[in-house]
Length: 112
Length: 115
Image (cartoon, rainbow over all chains, first blue to last red; front, side, top):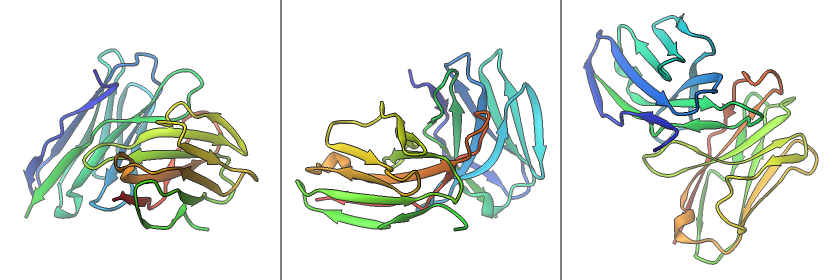
């Protein structure tokens, strides 16, 4: 079992719709959670970070964290074609480790 | 500089050749990470430096992989006797040392193709 699991997709939504991306993780002691966006052939770019249970909103993006369920999600409201990319969920585990553990990514396509 | 830079951006190597990949972190960032990203996968951790000290190299896949950061700034990832399975994008990331909530900023990556 991978430490960070994401639906690989592809996920297609029409322009203006809400895109919902999900991620589960196995290390119950994980403290820091990140969503990165990666366009094809480019490097990952941070979209959101979340550290405590609940919702965190930034513009059209909302991250949701439920540590009891070991679940983190990203909602993209009013999806735009420019949001089409692969979204990577990353988790920093408990303890002294500082590296991120990534999921395989969910490929999102927003259809005009 | 404004961001993390890496060179070369592309490298084609013949199997058995040694390669060296360079990373320039964001100025002032103490932590530096190397990740390997295979096609269609998320990045996988290779090694971590805090200043010049390599604190974690648990992700290096074999003893053919070696990384250094002698002055606590620029880092080099060296792969000896490259194999076809080493073909991947090698990403460098840097961050401030802080609470562990620090954001890691990624460079553009070096795309390595071993023939």
